[in-house]
Length: 367
Image 1: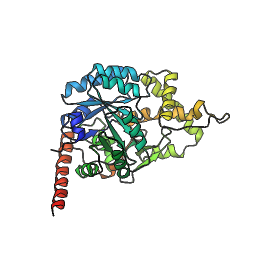
Image 2: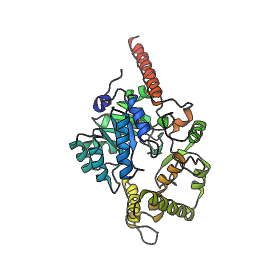
Image 3: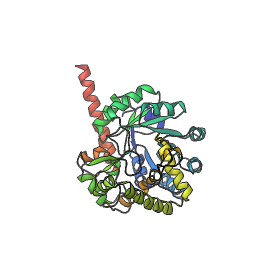
Image 4: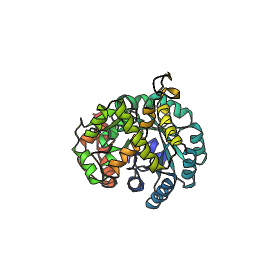
């Protein structure tokens, strides 16, 4: 049994966390992961308040083990979501992008364990100063929104900078990766693509087959989805996005923004607010110059509207199975995955391989 600061903090058997993925990480996958001894998470960013409340109750009904909810601190209704989480007695909350100190305080006062996401050492240091309990540090190999620092360089740097458990993410799929993460100073690993490619994942089979067919060069980092670096599977649709000029990108962004607003029930003011918050939250600043089509803070209308692209395009693939039109966030590890085990089979194999690896290292030390 491998015990770390993360397993002690969360009360889980194994130091393995299922990353939150929009339209993928619902009650079924989260409960399966938690029942297998890891930490399952619900991705709430693409859910309404009512859907989140139902997902919390559904997950609690499927597992008695700890699970978490991933929260966007910049959502207009973030405070209401925190109240739902506390009322539902969710043990753990992780934040997508930068957390807010007041939300951390409210959750900690209610006894909820908090986890922040970080793509750089300074992000982890800031969250730790705000009282966060653990941090997920994601290297550039990961899927979805990523930074530029490789995992092997980021994790040792973050682990040396903070005195809280560090969860390594970006490029993990097996026990050898877990051993490497522990050697770098992490207390566990988080995996997204590997959990997406399990039999417990709700993603349509046709979509899973596209992932399984991808090679190590089958992903690309693009800013054409929502204006910030996003690692996705390389598809004809992604290639088209990268080829589009500004006018074409604006038309597509406006169309997708309208579609997401209709599904989510957000007003135009709220939808635009989320778009602006996404870019401010990533530290992107503009000049605010007149005559450039920019709004206050230096953001163009195209950038603001592009923030609505992700939910629409993710849903097309992950729910509707439209691999020709949808967006498929993916880590580079997709090129190494060849099977669809259950969460229990996956975590069991990871822990057995990790124990063998640690024993091999111990033998080398004794020789």
